[in-house]
Amino acid sequence: MNGVDRYFGASPNVTLALGSNSLELSLEKIGGEIYQDSVSIAVIHSIAPEVSLSVEPLPGSKKNTTGRYYLDYEVSDACDPSPIISAVTGVDVSGGAKLSINKNGVRSEYGDQGITFSVIATDESQNMTQASQVVNQ
Image 1 (cartoon, rainbow, N blue to C red):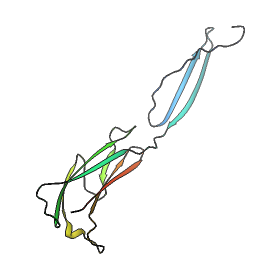
Image 2 (spheres, rainbow, N blue to C red; image 1 turned 90 degrees about the horizontal axis):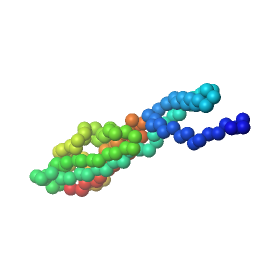
Image 3 (cartoon, rainbow, N blue to C red; image 1 turned 180 degrees about the vertical axis):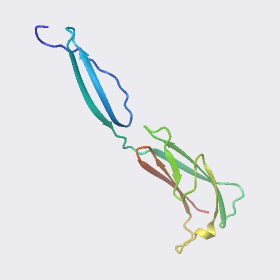
Image 4 (cartoon, one colour; image 1 turned 135 degrees about the horizontal axis):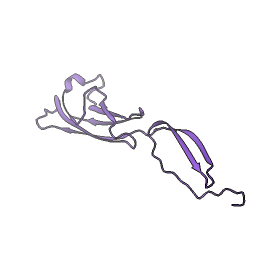
């Protein structure tokens, strides 16, 4: 209008995946002129998953010698629907785990400090969170 371009608030909605994304926008004026622009956008996920751990003694555990425990966890992440969960001890805890521990084998020179169970959640961007629980028997 009178040699002045007017824009009417075009706001394209896009959902971008993690990593590098290329976008191209084309606008066509009423007179047929086409304007194009492209941009590269990197989506970076830097927030670690949330993880909680619960350790429950199983019935039949012998106090002060052998402990049998059930480990359970919950993990969630804003961008990764299924972050990897692993135990610090190397025990597979996918879907929960039952562990039997000979406590005599884990006593240290500092005496009976309890047993620490830990799990680590890692998302696809390699952000990590650790949850731990100490069990005194």
